[in-house]
Amino acid sequence: MADQVMAAEGVLFDSLFVKHQAEVPIGALDGLPVTFALFFHDLSAFLGKANLFLEDLFVDEGYRGLGLGKIMFSSLARIAVERGCERLDWWCLDWNTPGVAFYKSMGAVPMSDWTDHRLEGERLGKMADLL
Image 1 (cartoon, rainbow, N blue to C red):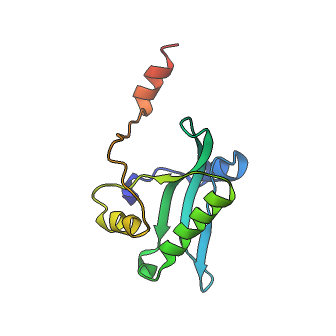
Image 2 (tube, rainbow, N blue to C red; image 1 turned 90 degrees about the vertical axis):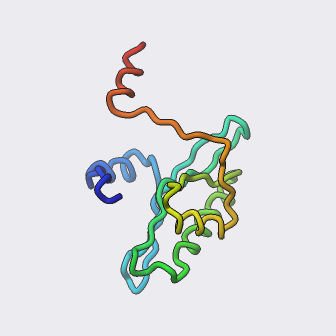
């Protein structure tokens, strides 16, 4: 999926450190960054409360299987609880069987009754131009 990443360093810097649109805890081992999570808050109209949405959870391939993903995931759950969030939500691609297995082992429940939708690029612009 690395070929699909289009985020430039300046855009990420602006989103994270200027606009504060997301947070990124970084886990290090022996002084090297080996894992990170990118998350932000959303608000559930059903619950009337904030939730944490996990956009990305990454563990460097050479450090997988050491429990670092579980530590990072547990840290996110702690942040959610400390901030009064009701849920921790995320997406996982169906073909990512190791990811699906990891999340299930953490007690996650797939939301099979929901379908994700997206507007982007030209379609997003066309929708915005309707007003």
